[in-house]
Image 1 (cartoon, rainbow, N blue to C red):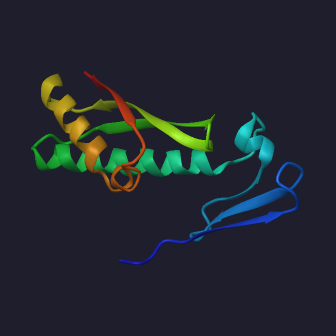
Image 2 (cartoon, helix red, strand yellow):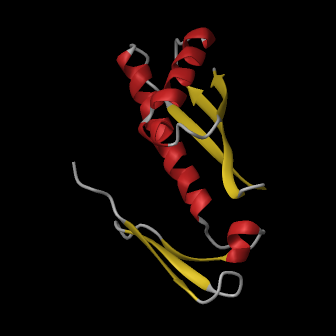
Length: 142
């Protein structure tokens, strides 16, 4: 398996400086700043990139798990909310909330919930982030 790469460059002071994030694939490159990370500036930030990685991994892994169980998936849509908060020891990612919607013909909700919970605990990115508390709200669409 190839190693995946990404890079970041920061110039200047923490609050007045600015940076650039770039995926090794070339699929994304964009600016980030103190205000896009800790306030509400519309630029990119590392936490949302972590969130999209988690959402993508989860969606693929759940689709694969359901397919292996005999339930071909029409779609899995995942929204990952990465919560960054300041505590006594500084800023930290304090939790990740996964909102999942899937359309899977002939699947009962109990089986879906079990597969979604198992995927939350075992997709590659979830394992890498296992020190962060995670919640899941999974909805099966008929």
